[in-house]
Length: 483
Ligand SMILES: C[S@@+](CC[C@H](N)C(=O)[O-])C[C@H]1O[C@@H](n2cnc3c(N)ncnc32)[C@H](O)[C@@H]1O
Ligand code: SF4
Image (tube, rainbow, N blue to C red; front, side):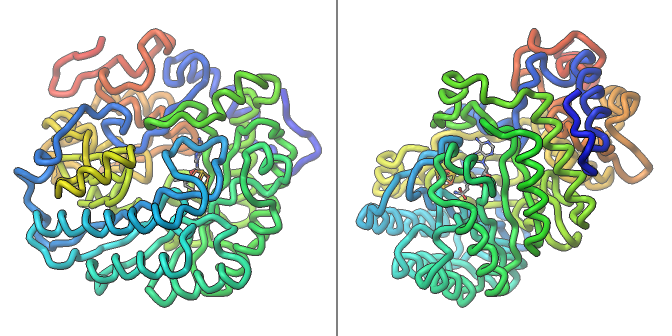
């Protein structure tokens, strides 16, 4: 096998690769080894058209009036080849001004429809794009737009997703100070790699030095710092990937987040990494090599005191985690999103904003919510949603599942749970079910066991016809929907 005998961090790799083959033959993992990140239920790419009016027509806000808030800023300096997000590139000062005005109006339209003069924020996440890729005066305007519309008195976390270059030097440090002054307390920095050749192949606009400087500056300004890496990228090897993670654990950051490269788009825009793969198949790590990278990174992170907290995020202490993600995926709490491509997840419904700039501006000028896809979940979809997200990300508390759905896990998912327990992917006690370390390693696939056949990411024939084929045991409500 491909293991480096000389490295201390290669334990469990061969074991995981053998388990991968076994789980593939059981039908858990699809035949080609490709994966689909389980982030929402139903998956975000599968929402039907939806009119803006449908989202709020029969909606009642939560009793405590609190929301997790997402704000999206879709501008970047240059296009990273792996990125599937619609963004506009370059300075574009006047377009950014136009966007900020539309964004403020979108928040106002929501507040008017919901009957609030301010929204009570439980947590805030600002993402992109690169939400710090704004001139200083525009960043301040944006922070003020949020400040005037959000009541932050009970807000437990204010996070910005950033790229390294916008944080360094005199201007970058002014941004850091400004964000601190407006209450931002956590930064998620897209480092992606610390290997110069990989960063180049990604078409990142920075080298490792700038990323290291940004991390050190962000820590100096007192932010909780989470850094993100991609593995499975073209040209990556187990050795050069391990060297990156060994460097990362010495940087003093609070959290390290790992993403397996997704070649195919999960939205409307297809990043060019897919075509890079077609042109240079020889440079693409195999699935086995990619899984080895993941296990090696886990070994290094664990050896340095980083433990998987929320799925794929490794934290120095359990209290370091994204409140926004936890509230949405584990708490199943109401969340409002503003800006291009943003989504709102409101208990039994989901609305997705347009991914098209012109449509975004047009709908807001018409004083409509800029959504075009979404769903009010049926009872069955609601039951599946209440297991998929918490199971993938942390665990499912039986009493909470019952509270949210009015069903016990036993009534709806007993066959699935038993099959996953039998194959060592799940554990269960009186209070909860959760993933074993093996289940956590293949968390997306385990979560997809609970999808309705219409929402399983790959067709039935892509999975072996074994005990864990996701189309089997669709016994919810005693009916057999799938085979
Ligand atoms: C929402 S993106 C925005 C990141 C931010 N604009 C930046 O580049 O720093 C958050 C993270 O998702 C990861 N990501 C983006 N595209 C990906 C892909 N195709 N496959 C795997 N991970 C990806 C990257 O690590 C990225 O930092
Ligand atoms: S990865 Fe981030 S910086 Fe790169 S193009 Fe996508 S959103 Fe922009």
